[in-house]
Length: 198
Image (tube, rainbow, N blue to C red; front, side, top):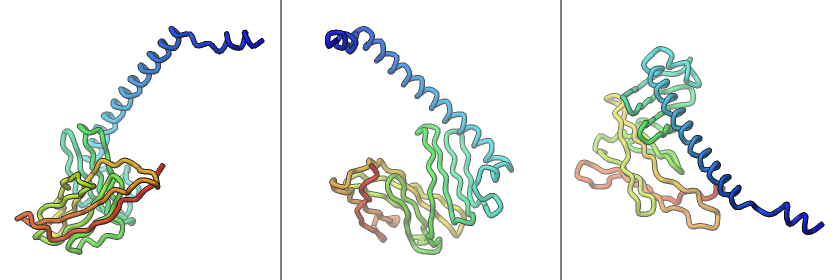
């Protein structure tokens, strides 16, 4: 009986190699399909954003006020206010990414503020002296994008490389700095990023 069991449990090396090859091919096909889906969705959203249908894809169309919209071949930026507050959506065809930024309870009239964690950070800039913003994760510097919404409002956002850490690991040391035209830091904040998420 034991001999039969051993025979049935033996792995056929040729079958195993074929299975690994099929698995690799399936992964490639999934990547191709995900890529095609992103491109199709990206192009569809661009068309919708340039039409009155844009309100149909938003969660609260009745209360939405579109404050800024920029649609280009390879990216789009969309800033609006609804009953939940201010929201920003940024999508890049090259990076195959779409990120949503929430400005939860941030005051657009404050000199500088921020909200976020993990991958994304964002906020308002009311101080005209601030010309650049950067997010520093340990020793890695991420220059933020600044968007002028109108003559009274500017927003900033940054997307960083984030890897979740276990509770036993050291948290990332984070800094946010806002500088004037001469590069002098005129606003800053330091903190540890959250742990967990596994």
